[in-house]
Image (cartoon, rainbow, N blue to C red; front, side):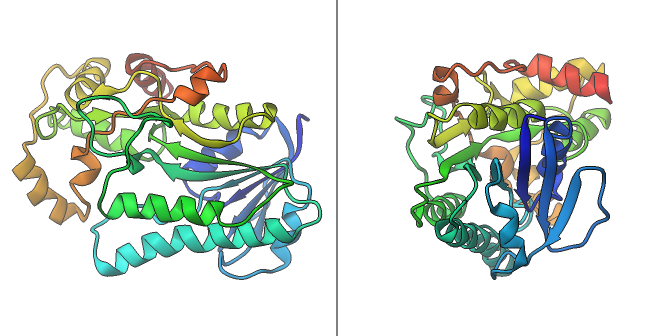
Length: 307
């Protein structure tokens, strides 16, 4: 096996399942830190933690090859005061706790990848945003990302290399955004959303997993990395690609006012659809990483072929 132990904090969600499957043949042991017990499966163990306090779980971090922190309440919800507080706490508390524990360990993990989000950048239709020249936006989502990365960088971890992974919209087979967009297409409502000119910075789930292995294998890499495909697309083009792949030539558009009304009923926020995320993975590309799915057409075809 390539790795002795990989630890996934909050690894029972969608991306955690993707990573667990990806590393199933690459790691001797995968440990998931979770609030809920789960039956052991082959090399996968679930260890209980609450994401707030130290406990026996901390021993799982000792000399691990890689820790990936995926903790965070799903932002696909209405931004009520209660939900906003949970979105903050579910990210900041586990991240700060992991930082404290790693700081105190004699033999900490070799690498700590902490999830962040590409939504930290401003609404951009004029030019792409990268790690060096990108400009942060404002508003609740950006505040969350900035606080999240601050918590990640709060503690010095001289024995543990750290990477803040600013993830784009993950397109995958079983969950997240793609199945919802595909269902809209099948119902004939897969046209542009808003004016359709907002950029979508996406990444195929396999490339999201592959880049974590790339970081583990390249000890010279650290700091902030954007995890988005090198060819973002505008919303109207993405919907066109999905329609074509699904054999649905017509899709009714959803103007902004309709999205605002609909978001109340489905209990989400229009920002998730209408914000233009034009983000490029410059540091990944400069490091030599090659995306298996650089174009939306190839990513969508792969997902639908699998389905």
